Length: 116
Image (cartoon, rainbow, N blue to C red; front, side):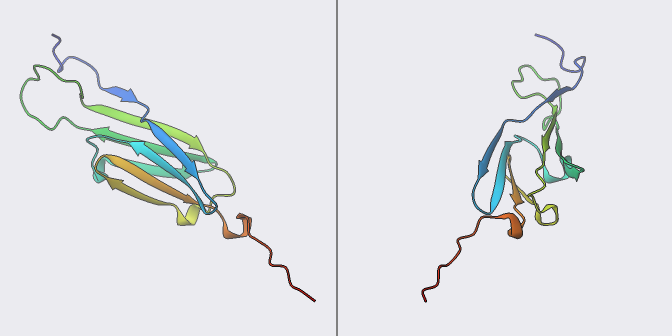
């Protein structure tokens, strides 16, 4: 066994699933053990960056640890089609749901056909 105190903090890219529908792009990121206060989401230029920190919830010397304290970091390119002012994030049970709405003017719309 190794002494967890002597190891440096690890940084990992969280696992992310990406979905798209007519109105938005949805990023679903696994951030186990991360609290709202330890999460930063920033949109700058054409980049969206997630940064998070998972602390060690226990005190004392770890005898066995499969989920050590860890930093998470991941960046994504943002399309100009995304309405940055309406981006919303929800953290629930260690899963981040990041809603990236498309600009209404750029979403596909069905054109009604008139008769006569």
